[in-house]
Amino acid sequence: MQLKDFIMGNHAYVLGAHVATCEEAIKLGTDLLVQAGAAEARYYQAVLDVKKEHGPYYVIAPGIAMPHARPESGALDTGFALVTLATPVNFGSPDNDPVDIVLCISAKDKDDLNNNVIINVMTLFENEDIVADLRKATGEADLRIIFDRVEAMNVQ
Image (cartoon, rainbow, N blue to C red; front, side, top):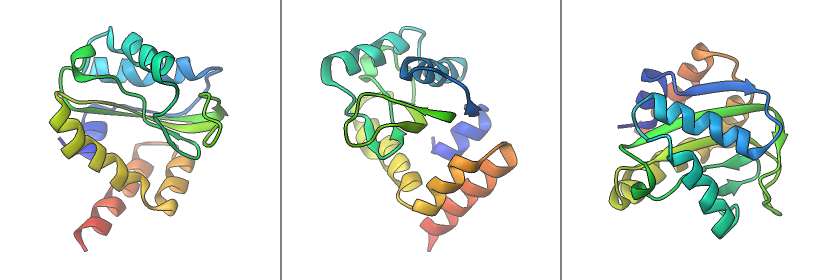
């Protein structure tokens, strides 16, 4: 499933969330994945364990985190959950903190992660104007416009 279709079809987003920690931001995202049937509840702890073991490597660009865990750690299917933060929080990344866009992902297997999920994420975040607009989005209408622009850029 494509990122736009999943997020919009499952209402898998929270915009302008107020959280105090990266764990709270991750919980919002993983809860959305669970509600959409893409992950089990244990996926949240698996994502925290990944950070504890490997550090915040999933903070992929300034202000952007893509928390995830291995498919066998509670992922049921491909899923995306977008959380934007009213106030950025630190994830422990010396180069890319603080974070204000959190895109939690799940993948049904390693091939799906590498060949579908990562491509969807990179397509969304490759344009600085799109990222800036995500930071300003306040509702579903804003997200639809943003996702439609991403699709139009990739068709050309």
